[in-house]
Image 1 (cartoon, helix red, strand yellow):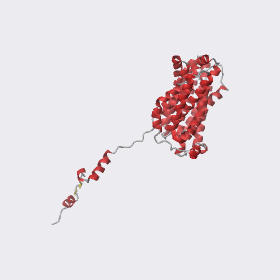
Image 2: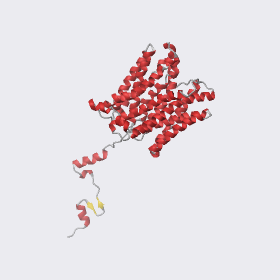
Image 3: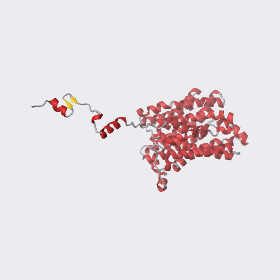
Image 4: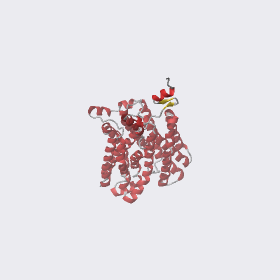
Length: 403
């Protein structure tokens, strides 16, 4: 007797209408557990570095640059030195940051990556701040500021190294904006702290970075650089291959030019505003700081739009924006336009620091990214130091600005 197709299919667990639903109880114990694991297995997500955390790590370094500005006269009186001598408390910080960037990148970085730089930087910040708070004389206070700045530079470098893992540039952009905002906020935070605690309080604002050192080290340890010791570690600290990389040279060269223009305008633009308006240095500094802060915050749309714009066009926008800000600041007959130029330069600098950080590592192996970003930040700091020095040669010295 012939069987129907339905009978045949049902013998195999099928019907003519199609396959029957498989029930877990019909499976063997091994297949049942495999079926369960397949459905309850957690999905892995790749989370980008926390931009706000890294910004909080880097911002106090910028606060250390501007924080003492309004407290220097009180420091000069208490230490019984001239105002020009007291200015070394600011100059020393800039020198310490310039020295600390390559030093900590080369010494702590090759062995333990960003986590090692964060640890070493935090120790130096704490040691330098303690010396500043206890120093009975200007030379010891200056030495404390150098140690403090060296550590702050390391924390700044580590923040950008960790942010550089986000290849979109957005995390580095948040860090750059935070750093720029820290420089502006530090001006007023230092003045307020000096009123409450005395001038020494304005000189130890980088201590604020210690509040986020523990989570920053935890974040730095994820996918960190491999450890290197001995001759291999020493060879890895040599930057010759980095300096020969075209991507690094373009990014660092453009960052150097943009930063030089920006900090030259931070020196020169307020003097021109004061000459056009007759405002006091404090009034001029307050308005100029707000313009720079607004420009830094407005750099975020540029950072977000960068992937759609393309790398070449982004570089063109940065270069033309910096050039246009220079011309506008020097030629505009109205103070409002001079302030717009200053804000535009801040926008370009904050956006460039975020976007070019990732570009500085193009074409380099992953193990070299940390040192490349450290050298890139050194180019930025050279611009920080060179801008005001160049502007001073061509700017009226009669208007004293708080920077």
